[in-house]
Length: 347
Image (cartoon, rainbow, N blue to C red; front, top):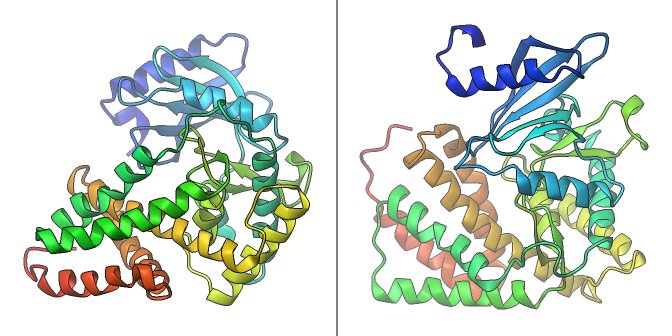
């Protein structure tokens, strides 16, 4: 179905806004979907007369606010990494016109041959961002925020997806695991954290448009915070959308650790401690993601994310099984999944 056949007041308003930008030779009727988003945001590609294309973002208030995107685009852009440039903006109505970083995500391009160079480029870009970190610039990724994210797991994954109500003993077990994770997460050095630094938000750039052939284009950074140093690395290497052998993940994690130390970043002084930090941070993120994926289905009707749950759960079980303090979570999951209702699911 073409855009013109849809009844969509927001789209009509966006087209009107684009047509009003008289200093930019846009072709508003070339507007077409560029990508979807797990939020309320939508992205469209629009051609420029005599040039290439730009990206129009539709972020409807009050559900979305483009101000953080504008601010963090400047902060991250000043570190030397490649983020979209803001060409025009209407903050009140939630419209942005951005430079186009192309349509090839890491996820579309990753394979055994391309992964090493792409990931090392993304590691170098991450270190650039982290090296420019300062406190009191971005909101703090504090205990309350980390715990609120963890609670998505019992609320949405256990409660809605498994259909199980925790008894007091099970709830106590889960909370002890949460306390262990949070103690580790909050003890880590703090840096700028993208929060979704993974294969769907990293773009393979046209070499003609990048300073370095392996520089990634970086998207979806508007929720950035100041938090644990391992968060973005684990987002990338323990990606919900693509899985790599443990040996490769360890190798890339070591390469990050070596480069981060050389850059003067405050990573743990030995690789064993660093990798434990990496895994504990990953557990917090994986449990959050399971809750988010369940919420996207049960609340928002987005069923595609159900297909990604098994990989994330494998990450949880493998990592938890390696650490004595986290092993009670594996035993709890065994009980919960065995007790979950076996009827009523159609996906």
